[in-house]
Image (cartoon, rainbow, N blue to C red; front, side, top):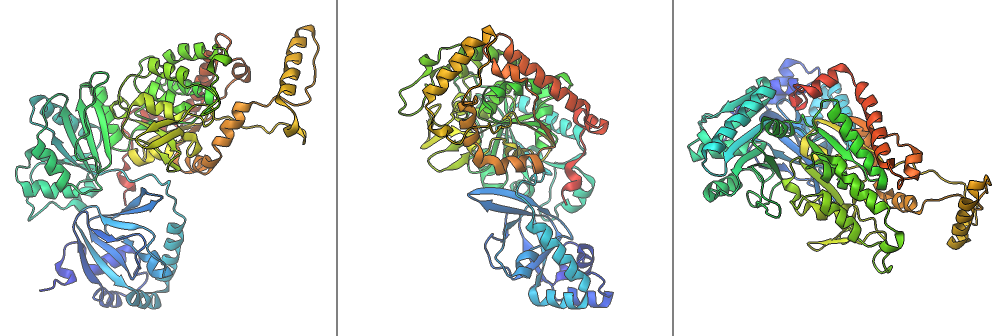
Length: 612
């Protein structure tokens, strides 16, 4: 027998209509009659309500549960938001007659009410305020950008890769840390026939943890995994995995649910622990060294309260990133996640593992003093050889995979083969940092698994969007060291002048300067490298504006002394760049509101309030 609307779980239909705002000023009797025209629709966690591109013939109101809205563009999936009880989806396609602009899936078991076009038209005729509300909502959602931070995860499923006394203790410590930092409820008993009311728990708890260690019944574990926003698996290195348990998590958890792999201890250089699961879902590995600080960093990343840095490209200006990082640490803050492009990728890789990031300076100073002729290549692939830059990275970056970094790390490259942005989640950290900084034509591209990787600044020179995907928010600082490209006063016929003529003029001006003779050059000084860098990042200008205007909580453009940039070979010039950047950043941090500083230094505000 088909169930009626009132027999299904969740709020009564008339209450859903009134709470959603769609009922407007409709009289109560009319509201009850309208509610009877709504059709019940049930989804299990992971089921798809409709796909992007589908024809829209109805909108759906949520009685119970939660929906996740996502959009796919150029093969990249972006989560636009979540919809909970008394909210609705599908109105844009229904009102406009266009195809669905996004895909909607159930984030957990969900009860819906379906309203077709005829019912909506009847509602608008009886309550004009409903029409105005829908018009406003359609406009707001039409201008919504894909740079909106993805919603933070609320429910976690905790499991162990194998039975182990030490892992059980770490799991208990992880739960205790969650409870210490946020209002977390732990569920260790579930009756699948009478499951807990997650909508109610979401009102009183900032986060929910299903402790799979204590859920002995397979059906209970299946239900818990299907309702979870994220799976968390703890593993001890060099201990055999429980393959049956691994297979259960892979098969029972929803395909769109990310997996956090907390690895206790760290593989030796050159060794690599394989990913947990089948690799078919978003995957994040956290290295845990056994300390409380390490566990707190993991939890901050998982609960949308991490402090993250997005580091831009900018050639030698990239050393200013070290000053920004030094200022944050001197101010007593901990950096939890870093994303970098080009020079920012090299700096990020150094910061992610080194106790003394300044160790990057010595090899760079030696490189800057290297005669240019020894760096030149036959111009078949690139102007310069990649040997010296590879040697620098060998000295300052360990032989580990990017997913084994002590601090979660993201490196952005550009793939010449697919002509797309590429942010790998696995692979040699040295090789990826090298690829991200390979300015086309200057350094040779890096081949990797059928790709040909070059400087990531081509598509994204300030990769703040990579942080929103993995942190769900937190505090994101965008550090832009690309510098302003000043348009020099160049004569109209400058493009016809030989480079040898320009070189001769510069040499003559340099030789005469000690005698007090100032010569005006026929052509102004134009830095060829700056021109190449600027040209290479033009395509990322839109991404740059989105990072600054929509993503970053704080933007830092270090004030770098021109005299230091103009004399980088001079002893102490690089330290001057770093110190100036540090002082500039300290002034910005000192100007932060006291409430914000306390939030960053102590217990953060809950992201829970923004979920609905």
